[in-house]
Length: 465
Image 1 (cartoon, one colour):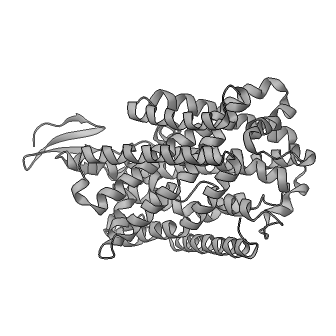
Image 2: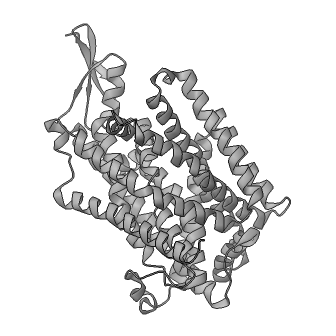
Image 3: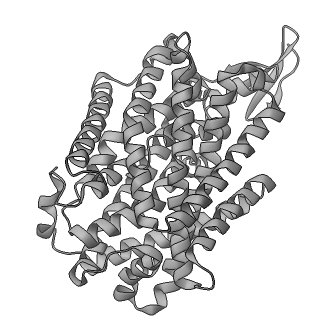
C-alpha cells in the first residue's frame, strides 16, 4: 500500500488499483452536535411556519385550550415516521425512497405513484403557506393586494433556488426564526396562565362543535406533514453523514474503511439533531396556542383573511408594546417563507425521484433538472390559481393540512417497512429500533388512521367542510 495521507477526514492509500479512504469517527461534543444539525432543523422549519403561526393561534383564539392536547399528541404519534426515515438514510447511506421503490417492485411501483399524486395535491399546501407569509407582509406593507404578495413569494422562491443563491438567505432566515421563537417563548412566560387552566386539556377529547376542520388540520400539520419524512431523508443524503458519505466515496471509485465508532457516533449526532429540533418545535407550538388563547380568545378575535398577520402580531404587541411589531412580522415572514422555500425544494426532489424511479431512462442530470424545475413551475401556476381564487390563508392551509393527514398513514407505514425489510447485514441490524419503539411506530400508524376515519365520519355526517 502506498503511504497514507489525510483525506476527507481520514486517510487514504491504494489497494487493488483503487485508492483507499479511511473515515474516522466524528466527535460528539456540543460543537460537533451543532455542526451536524441540519435535516432535523429543516424538517422542524417546515412545521413552524403553517402549523405554529397559523393553526395554533387560530385554535387558541376560537376554542381556548380545547384543542391544546392535539399538539403533544401529534408530536408523539408522528415521531417514529420522521425518525425512521432519517435513521434509514444514516445507516443505509441512501434515500428512504430507494426502499419505497423496492416495496413497489412487481406491484406497479405504487408507492412512487402515491407520492406523485400527493405532490400534486400539495399544491393547496404551497398556496396556503404563501398566503400566510403574504398576510404577514401585508400587515407591514399593504402596498399591494394579498394575492399579489402571495404570488410574488412563489416567484422569489423559484428565482433563489434556480440561481443557487440560498446559502446566505438560509443564515438570515435561521437568525430571524431564532429571534421570533425567543419572542414567542418570552411572551408565553409573561402571559402564562395558571397550569390549572389548561392542564385538563392535555387529555384527548372529541372535537368541539364546529371545530372538525381545524381538528383534522392540526393533526395533519403538527409537528409537520408526514410527507416531510422522505424530504428529510433526501436532505440527510445531501448532508453526507453516516453511510451516505461512504456510498458517495464508493461511487467516486474509492475503497472505504471506517473507524469502529464511525457509524455509532454519526447515529448519536443524528438523534440529537432530530430530538433537539423536535422538542424546541413542540414547546414553541404549545406556546403559540396558549398565547392565542390568553390574548385573542377573550376579545373574540380570530386570525383570518388578509388581516391574519395583523391579528397574530397583536398577540405580541398587546404583551410587549408596539415596538415588537417589526420583530414579530420579520420573524413570522422568515418562518413562513422558510416553509414555502423548503417545500419548494423538498417536494420537487420527491417528485423528481418518483419520476426517475418509475422511468429509469429519465435518470440523467439533464432530465432530473427539467423535472425538478418543471414541477416548481407547475406549483407556481397551480398555487397562483388557488391564491387568486381563494385568498383565505387560514382556510386554504386547513384544507391542505387535512389532505396531508389523509396521506400520512401510508407514508408512515412505508417508513416502517423500509427499516424492517432493508436492515439486513449484522452491522445494519445493530441499528434496528427495539421492540418498544417498533410498537410505538405501529401505534402511531393506527392513531393517524383512526383520526383520519374520525375526521371523515364527522365531516360526512355534517354534510362536508
